[in-house]
Amino acid sequence: MTRNRYDIFEKGGDTGVLLSHGITGAPTEMKPLIRKLASSGLTVSCPALAGHCSTLGELKKTRWTDWYATLEQSLMELREQCSTVFVGGLSMGALLALRLAARHHDDVAGVATLSATFFYDGWNVPRFRQRYLLPIAMYTPIRYFYSWHEPPPFGIKDERLRNIIAAVYANDASQMPEKYGYSEFPGVTIRETFRLIKAVKRELAKVTAPLLIVHATEDDMATLENARYLQRNVASSDVETFFVDDTYHVLTLDRRKYDIADRVASFIDARLPEAEQTLEFSHDIHG
Image (cartoon, rainbow, N blue to C red; front, side):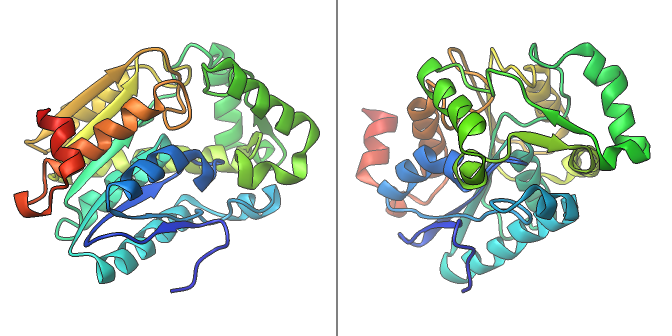
């Protein structure tokens, strides 16, 4: 199996978990969750999506179908090693995971979405951006030159981490892609995220796998309406929600990252045959 040097892969047992970072993000933003799942004996894969961990020029060349193709190929590779595979993702990565579940019923045992984003309606998204800049980025040639620079808090409520990210963005641009992703969102990439949203909305009714929806009550980019929209539109009969406070959009790095990792791990374990459940998981659930 050939991997990008920024891919994260942790070999464990016969149950696998495929994770997707967010668009303009990087696998490193998933590390606390990866560590929890790997320490519980699971095989975990988190590939760098096409165009990521490179340059903005490379990112601009990619389309949402390229991002999805990265994840779909990783699913096939993980299924060769594991009898059971769960998928999950952060923000737009959650939408990519949902599309996998919609299209690969026999290969996906469950889905965990973190900050799934169907509408950019959070408190840190200016209305003028929604009404004027996004249409420009999507429907005019200006999209090839326009980039949106995300302002603080960068989806992070933890001030210490937020300051570290701000320092990286300001002083060490060459290391941004692999550390915390890109500091800007090119217009052509914005257009592709909206195309991804549209494609996934059309397929939500095909999602039948068990589903865990995790969302922050204070999400700065996407309100809880995103979680409610997802819950209303999937066909899954087994749906759990976990709404958390004291955290913003990047759930995997912010103040509640360990609580969220524990909840994802418990969700997975509860849907495995009893013989495959670990003592650590059983303690979390029953103890």
